[in-house]
Length: 372
Ligand code: NAD
Image (cartoon, rainbow, N blue to C red; front, side, top):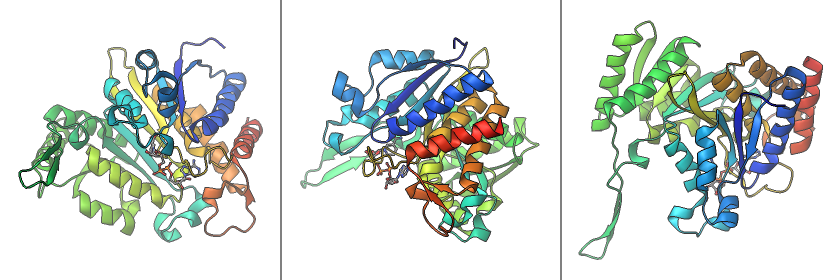
């Protein structure tokens, strides 16, 4: 179906293409039954692109990504490419997309579905009803700061170094995304850094506070050191709504939060850029899991994280909230009916139906049919 919405699909490596196949079924269903159509281009990324083109992302694919309204990304990497030179590593394809699309705000929801409250490694009473959103700054900080590298010292030792660097605008734009999102949720933001020991942390806290005072005083703002936050996420995670933090702390804290929900196979993410004059933001949606080489090709992967990434795309790139709600509801109902891929077989497994990737995808489609 022709539409005004251009979507680039990059399935990538390992389980990426397997879970993306299931999402393509959901996309087709939404096109047919709810007139939510896309003009879809598909391309290679990561090891798959390296094998075919000698680079982890071609310039053509990069151009298509820059022109698309949204990119739906699978996952990249795997042991086959572990020893390729640094600049050709599959992950460089992903980093190039993030950098050139200037996707500075990474949204990672951690939500516990009621039927899976037993799957968390924490007690059900601690995680029940959990619904938090971690916003990680994605294009600056220590993963990009210069200088970086390694040198050989006079005594023969090697010394390696990275630079943690942030400027005011980088901090303000990601904090603005957090405040705006909080207004649509429980109106609470916790900003996290290590202002006690890092200059970037001091600047982060100053800028978050200033911006809050200038434009978002209606939102409740708190600050917490990143190490304290790591503890509080395990002790009483329900105290948080939106958390905003830098690239490095966000990487670690969002992985920690994801484990509160039970499985990597359930967690989507969105990465957003600045709004242009028409209000359109460059955006990429991807599950937080990797290419899972240990189960790739076996039909065992859970497609839910990829499907929820598609739902986030409907919500944040196209304002199709009702359609996103429908996909999320179908997934919750399928879980409530006891369908479980292997990664979800923890805790109480009485009455569950063990399924593979395709069966999980089919169950979601069947539930969409029923709900519609
Ligand atoms: P991983 O997320 O691929 O896997 C961790 C564990 O979780 C594995 O046991 C895996 O089987 C399981 N798992 C992950 N997703 C699952 C799903 N949908 N369903 C069921 N089980 C699932 O992380 P890893 O093993 O550390 O990394 C594997 C490769 O993926 C590496 O090459 C790494 O660099 C790459 N990676 C890529 C991305 C990305 O593309 N964004 C992110 C993380 C890791």
